[in-house]
Image 1 (cartoon, rainbow, N blue to C red):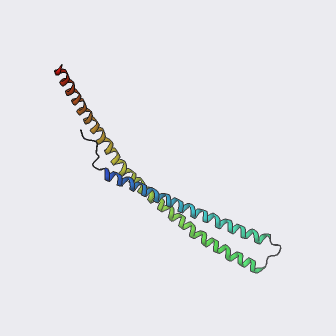
Image 2: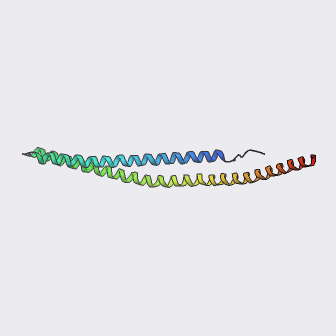
Length: 144
């Protein structure tokens, strides 16, 4: 009786590795989007802080208002770039999710094939074992 050996084991292992790589890339994309969202929140907080600082001054001159205006424009431009980057990251996440699902499907197909082949092997193994046990019983019975 031979031990069970799945002929496509190397392919199954490669597909498993592929799933892990695709999932790692997806996690990296989620981390990137989260970092961008944090940067966007930081820009909002910074803008609000500067506005409050100007409003808390007892006297505001034209230079300070001009600075605040330039700063607000700079923050708005940075926010637009960051929002565009978040949208791009979201698109890449959607694409990567599809790749992860495809990689999982490919791996699961091989897993099912492996399980089916193992079940067939186990049935054959049990038949052989039963046949050998029967032969051993008959041989012992004939000796008696």
